Length: 240
Image 1: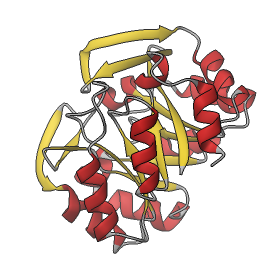
Image 2: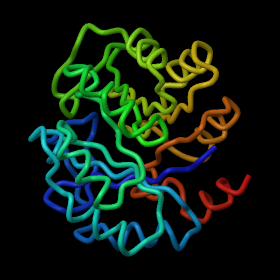
Image 3: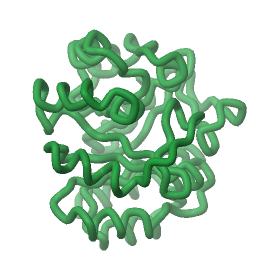
Image 4: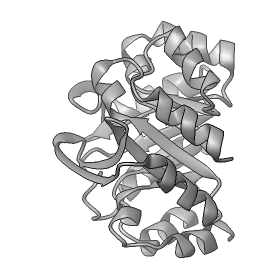
């Protein structure tokens, strides 16, 4: 299982929100590159980079931070937040992202997302399936839908999706543990899908449970920034 540290961006700074609430923002570092380099120095190889400004604006905003981190590290970056057009997608890839996550676009403009899949390939395009009470949430989680998360994922697996990042919005940023049932259900339904868990990780014990579920990866954010798990511990875990 890949340990994937997260950097969430607002105004070019590394922050974390609680349950996706922009009013519950905590700034951790004004220089995200420093954070990314610390991850790389600790032996981590991947990075989940989220443009929260972009998610709100429905267009990529913090592309310069992506370009800087991609140019100064060898991290495998997956980028999400505000990628709503072909131009945004191309810009993000040109700035150095190896993978791009589409969530809102996959809900609101499925034809565009399907075109991205066929044009750029299932190794590049990740499906973002963020859920609140097992229903898809979009637009930086500010908008709920009535779409059942499992139907949503199944539809895109049939269209060739190989990677999915799923966050339980109710768990994110609370350090109270991930939504294990959500990931078990996804794993049971889609055993060949590369599932990346996100949200709620509180420490090593949570990571051990997720690893036993044989998930592809887990995104860790607030637990790192709040000192619940050290980079050294994550390095050992990543080597297992």
